[in-house]
Length: 424
Image (cartoon, rainbow, N blue to C red; front, side, top):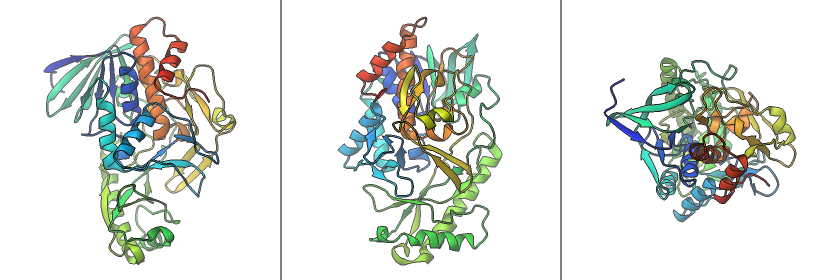
């Protein structure tokens, strides 16, 4: 790593501008903190914009009527999408009964940019975390690198919203906090050249999977044709049928897996053309630029959410956010299970699940928060990540203001003032 040529200072530094990182940055800024947000790509959005995971899951309780369980920054992002002419009305999946909000990735990039820029946040795009300085039990600074060289960011509180736990890892934690094996990844495909009326008969996707799987590929497609959604304000279709084992922390194997996945996506869409109908002219409009990773590093936090808490819909003391997505557990490529949320259909996420064990000024958000293997299948989704991100940002700002005595009641009031939902 090169020697830093410039230094920046702030109150709260956040790594990763997915839904968790964006919400954390806005939450901290509106609580009075000076904020720097670091993102490796040239746009925000995380898995939604880098991996074509084009649906916000977890914003609503799984009931007959869509009942919102996540507000605050998430609501503002949806409003920004509406201003761009994108319909954000939730739809209910016939297969599981879950409510989701389909996304247009290009519109989402603009909506997130607009939502971030109205807050006083210093944004570093095209910046990769490359070093962490730890003094005693605290992170003192992080180093980022890019075309600008190497820069150092000093802050009083830090939030790891990287998805991969990169800040936590570079702070000296070599081991994962989760059990193996990892939940498999998926490669969603944006399909263009689709004719009208395809929604009336989706058998073509099942037939395409059969044609493709008959070739005995290394990466098999879901035999039922996978999940298919219409991308709002476009003529493209979102198709998720390819699941694969992938670990982004393994530099060699992950690159090979991405090569194989892209090849598989091309072959699968070729099979879709052979299925005919509205898909005779179908083509791969986009993959990536990254596989949709569900799980990699799992930081060790002060507390873990347990599966039993989700099954019973428990609201523990110190709950700072709510979750409503079922435990969606992917055991192996193409094999998954949904376990419903009990109680009233939602559960509480305690602040201690966001606090890293052993580092007093480091928080985590999104799919990095503490949860056991099954509970992880619920907390990792992007809708819930908005809630945990905003909570982490607000808590971090209070840590900076009152380092010796953060009061839960004050954090809760700040979240409620920002429109976050902490109780129903």
